[in-house]
Amino acid sequence: MKIDPDSSKDLSVQIAQAIRDAIISGSLRVDERLPSETELSEHFDVSRPTVREALKRLAAQSLIRTQRGASGGAFVNRLTFQDAYGQQITTSTLLLSMNAVSFETACEARYALERACAPLSAQRREADHLATMRAEIYRQGQPGLSDEAFCASDVAFHRALVDGAGNPVLSYQLAGAVEAMQPSMNMITFTARSREAIIALHTRIADAIEANDAGTADSALSELQSYTAKLANDVIAQREKT
Amino acid sequence: MKIDPDSSKDLSVQIAQAIRDAIISGSLRVDERLPSETELSEHFDVSRPTVREALKRLAAQSLIRTQRGASGGAFVNRLTFQDAYGQQITTSTLLLSMNAVSFETACEARYALERACAPLSAQRREADHLATMRAEIYRQGQPGLSDEAFCASDVAFHRALVDGAGNPVLSYQLAGAVEAMQPSMNMITFTARSREAIIALHTRIADAIEANDAGTADSALSELQSYTAKLANDVIAQREKT
DNA sequence: AGACTTTTAATTGTCTTACAATTAAAATTG
DNA sequence: CAATTTTAATTGTAAGACAATTAAAAGTCT
Image (cartoon, rainbow over all chains, first blue to last red; front, top):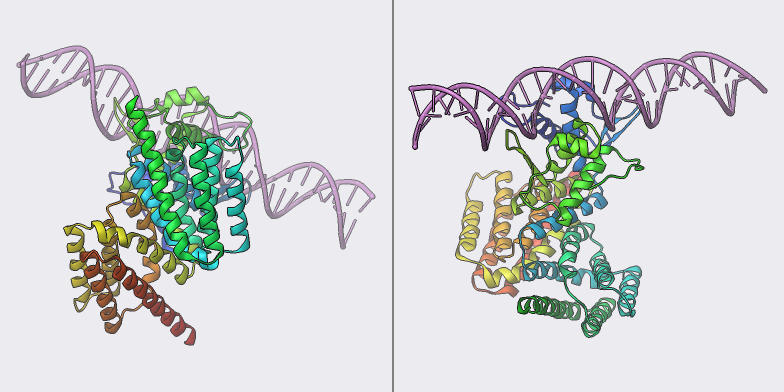
């Protein structure tokens, strides 16, 4: 584990990269303890604060965790799906908000991915996935529900649909696409009538998933995509008018 | 922008979170300069090294960039698709390698997502996407190509397919799924015969995309998925025998 | 001997101070 | 006015100290 003495990059970047490489290549294994900060600073011939900056970079990516105390130190972290979800969502959300991605583009991506899950979900969904979907549909029909709460429930519904595919890698990939849409979705005002339409489509999707009917689920998702895009367009048109 | 004085978390974590929140909420805009490290340390009432650790955490997520010199400082970074790709790939690769995700699961996820792109790609692909696909197919047929190079070309082919959909959000989401498979794919030894079969399928896909024929592209991808899974299974079976 | 308490040592977290490197802007000079 | 030099602001790095935490070791009491 060495660093390039001729590099123009900051030392803490180089050290972080060296350790990251060691983790990715497997020469540092999960739960293995890294040398102490003092040892690392001697090894790389830098000061302890510099080593610490490097370690913080790695901690920010959930690559290591640190523990204080006698037998403490920095340990290689097992990246959990949960951690990865979180990072995906943060990154996706920022990416969309900072790059002026149109609602249509984000929406298309999201539904394309969801439709990829639907056939698998129709085949493998378990009772609890269906139960969650039904519960969220019920919640969406409650009067007095705020637009934010309606959106949140929408996300939960779609997550259950995706999780029904029983493929954690798919769930992880989709988490970003679905959750990152939420800020854009929150612009939309959901009238009673549009909620009704969405709930009807959700019900059709849930029914299809329950009946192992991939085709119907797909077409319902397709309609939902068009309808959502239309709602967003109306909001945009309304804004431009005023 | 404040931090909780009663929190049990490390100060640098709290400060990073406070700044992150300010960026996500939009109260710090892209390219806006943060206060200097000295000012931040006074504002949060902590030392400069602690502030620096917080800033390094944010830099690791590409949320800020720093510049030395008179009018330097830390600036809110515009998260580019390029940056996001990189993070996605690192995270996905580690996730798969650290969680003993089966080849089958990862493969299923990858092809499910790719098949979601295929119809869009068949509709919108441009000349350069087709050119890249054809070029990679040609490369894959070259004798003396190493297995790693064959895999890399395979990735490039599939990226061109995905990019053909003309949706950067989809491309970003798929980057992780496709590239993270590479380490697993590298286990596979591609014989002359298996390469031939893969190239034939790639050609069928490219032809279908060129002909705007989503259906054929989908079925070819489906076959490719089965074939890839079969190759992997053979490798695993072979290993268990010895 | 065994259970409980205290001490110790290792380690990370934080602070302080200082200096080096870099860079844009201001001041100086020809 | 252009080129050069100086200056000041800012991040990067270093060194050393102390606080907080924690597991293990040592000690103590029953």
